[in-house]
Length: 290
Image (cartoon, rainbow, N blue to C red; front, top):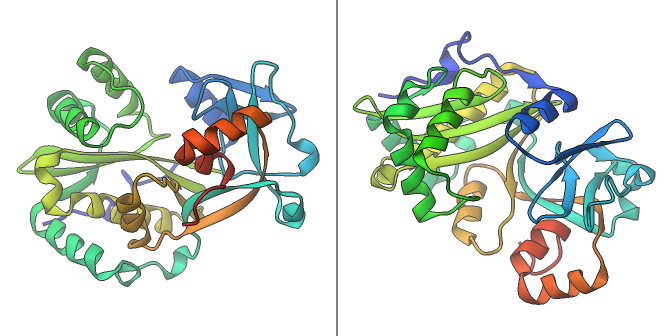
């Protein structure tokens, strides 16, 4: 039976960070972060391309400037009243009507997964590194082999990473356990009223249990019950992974194109559109429609 993380108010307390607090988190992780006129930007997608660390933070057009001389391109979302000045978009999976969320928000496939998960998986928040030190690297490697996300790190670095991350309440780490062994986990963070689902890792051997759906369901419920979250973002639309997009839509996360200003030199823009269309779409919102 599932033991919902959202049922226990104390361990499920959600810390909502400000931009400068999240900048500190990213710096601790080794990210390249710069401050420009009181806003924080981070290198993302490719070396030399910068975006706000708060991905959906809204900027006035006049505020969207080169954050550092080291960047060749940058992008930021516009305030709604200046959306006509957009020359691009940020295509992301979002849920905005949180008070209306329930199991019926999920489509039939996701509800079926949730029923399977409840029969086989215990879901709870993790604040102790022990499950990650015992089972985590196997989960991480299995997930990376199936669906690579970033650079794969070795076990020594993984253990050091999770020893530091697990007790850090600024992070929301929800784990799924089968026979008391970690089968998968979802890391999220809350920033100025928006919850970002950041990294999902599930061992291939337990995908059939519906664990991924259960991890998202409990994470969403924690955000709903917190009362401090207005929007949940599950990351960008990725053209090369249509199954992932189908999965997120089935949980009530359609793709929304957030109006943005994007600055990329024309030669790089032409190259990316022709040779790396998925990256081009993530950065500019251009390319094939969702």
